[in-house]
Length: 415
Image (cartoon, rainbow, N blue to C red; front, side, top):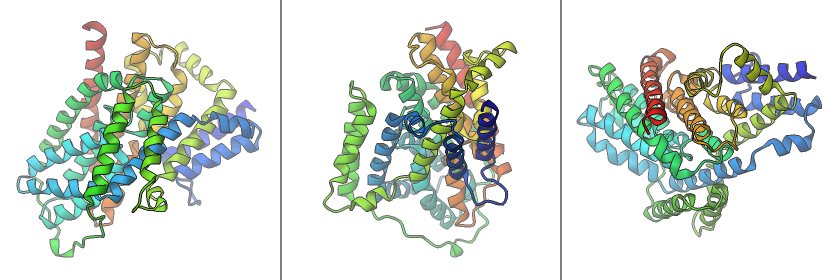
């Protein structure tokens, strides 16, 4: 049984890393779901154990925030913001900075994947029509959305998981993770500006670019979304469980006189929610046969202490770029103690949040936000390949990780 569990786990994570299985039209979610099914079919987990392995609080928080993001998308808020910042296009370097700053701030509040999904089409068309090269700006969008999302518990899916499992305080998380995120954002801007300093112009004729249908701006619905977000953030600073606050706000938003429930729920990323549920089950399967304990023991016997903050930073960075940061985080959390709320214990969760998120910038598959941005850009004949992204992603990630290590040193030995 141990051997079978290990085989299912390895095939599942290998499939997630590669993004597919030769000969089958399975994507990462499909592969994870098959892995979860096999854990139940072969009796490694009962159906009850599989269901109980899913962290419902994390799923509810993710779901509630997706409904909130749906409100903004249907209200045309993201499109309105993207179009507003295009007024800086006459100064490309300033426009790059503004784009990265806005996407980072929005990603910290409304999740990076949604920001990239909504911004990419508007920015791509606007840039091409202005005769600018979309590549540096779209890479900047993906990079900054990842970095910005690292600063809050609700910035990205893996941070939501870390915040829920680690039982972390929303305010303390923000205060610890924001300074390195801000410094990393500044560093990323200078990296991109330096690399593309002489390549901001586009060779594509604006005449061939067609504008796709975008959601028109609705002031009332957008304002309602902003008010709901402010109330939600205030609730996050109270003792009310975050998932309860999120689904409560989501329930209120569903009570609309003009936006149909089907329209709001149509923007919920059921694909990502299914991926989360499936990975919870797969990891529970290996937990039942004590595989995480065996892995930790093996690493420690070889002089690798996963609880060492510097090793944890490097380990999560590497693993996040093998299987993407969400699956990597779900595995690594099994090595951390959620009941350890000492200073050192809390730091492990903060470091994991920063390093796994910053790691998403290294290569294309490191983050779902990268894949969303680059796949959407292809619809407008803008191709951002692995090498093109890596020449920015590698130095940006190196800067971010060095900043993270520096921040660890400051926190441990100065404060």
